[in-house]
Amino acid sequence: MPNVEKISVALTPEMAALVRNAVESGEYASSSEVIREALREWKQKRLRQLQNVEKLIAKPQLDLTEEEKLAKLNKLFGAWKNQPDLTEIFAEIDQQRHVYQGRSLDSIDN
Image (cartoon, rainbow, N blue to C red):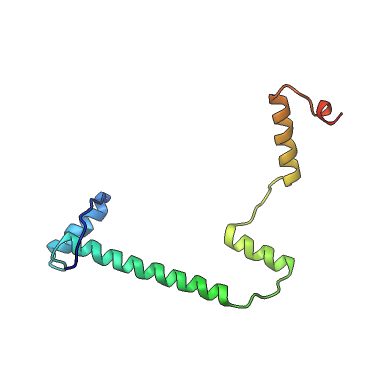
């Protein structure tokens, strides 16, 4: 085996039991083998995810209507329902800031 570095890893009781069971069943010779295989599979998964992202970036972008763009955003991030208009939110924040500082909005504008 090439040079190795010993590190300590904290596992939940359920994860630790999985590792122990894999070793006790003879499927693996040691806990380290279980963890190394898990890390190899994790690395492969991350590489596949990166390849998928790169494929998406390489695809030509379609011209979407505003409605289609909004539908895609809502699908990705969830629809914002019953939310006040941003202008209202910022106006309320501005009002609260001025009240906190002991001023009125009229005194700032004039």
